[in-house]
Length: 289
Length: 315
Figure 1 (cartoon, helix red, strand yellow):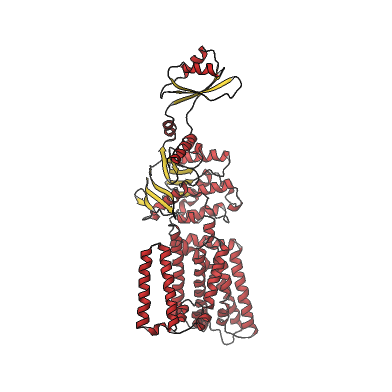
Figure 2 (cartoon, rainbow over the protein chains, first blue to last red):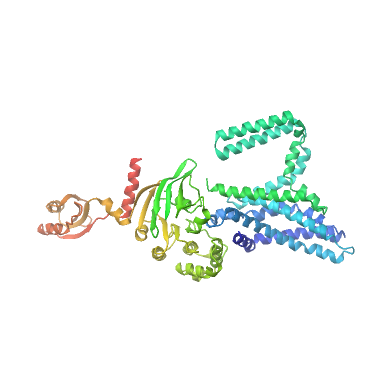
């Protein structure tokens, strides 16, 4: 894992990608810092971090687009997979390298609060800033895990970048969508039924087994019907609830206020873990095609 | 050492490898021979654990590739069809990375890299970026990569493709040398190569083994009878008559004239009978000068085509 991590990190800075990411991020961060802290004399730095989250939308696809696509295109995945490394080790090494570039960038931005601390008469809220950074880092890790996953689906960097951008965009606007979706029980039922149908389709297309799909269908239908009969309140506002599971941005709220609470931390880590796991499964699955 | 047990691989509905069954003994150089798309690369990818077989198992010294992948992969150096190179690295960095992922201990890393670079004569390009190397050099870096960690088994998929004739000869002798310490499986669709290097040949067509033997045995077994071609100065009729006068010759056939005033004949004698002296004397008696005489051993090329076409006729 360490070998893959080191190679990948070096590859970032052997090509323009690493520099583009770091440079562009710091440029935007610097502009926001100058406008909202320096020019307006405002000591609240976590506000800068939270307004920076939109940068992930277009910088994360650039950071992650070549992670696994290049391995497939250059056939170097054959070297890695036939070596004694485990697939988990390979994927983790790559993921951590992308996270590493992000961490390097964040470390550079620490300069901004340091600059401020020279002028802060009442001292700077360092703990608050640290909390903001932890949240920001974890949110970045979650975005990067999405990009990692999409880079395992194709051997074309551009396509991987576009998938990632689309997915992040959807995650981004999820909160707006969740506000305006219907909240009544019937639409909740329809939504859940659609999700069930997707599940059945997924089972069928990944196993090509009619029996397995039928069993899934029966179970899913029974669950939906039972829930609707006995736990009707469960369905009101259900769509918004389910969409909310994927809202990465909403959970940053606490951090930007300087609150360090456990649940968003656990959420970000499990979100990243889930996508890294899916990536590992994708790579393993390719051997069986 | 390697047991391949009824391995099949399906891509969708297409059967790429069809119940392949063979063993490779320690110290052997086994050649996979087959037309493009015969399933050579797929088989190699299955043995090295890059792909999983749809059916069957591959064992190395009793360890199953799917159950103990780490254990097996440590024992194998693999050079796939396209050398798996990180083109934005220098040769030295690349080989050092390969040492890392193969878990070569630090103390023997230098020696490992030097040995591999020396054997493939790439020491002079060690500081260059791989993307700037020629195809031949890239190919050799790919082979060097497989030698890192001196694995007991080497699997080389078309190792001489893209090399110039001089390098092909060097690589073949390298493979023969490596065969003294390593067990090697190599694939090729170049027949003389297999003949020159391998101690045993598996001919594969449409995912099935159609023949398995030493190159010499294959060549001998296929001929059946003992055949000679001769070129005689003189008329066709006289020449045929003279040839028929030799008792051991069972069949004579004229194959036309390739030089003015001469005729070419194919004579067939029974197995294990050397008729060359009698043939010479027979033509001499008929005062037809014998200009050329050679025995017709089938080349691997002909055997190969024979086997493949037989397959086609059957199916």
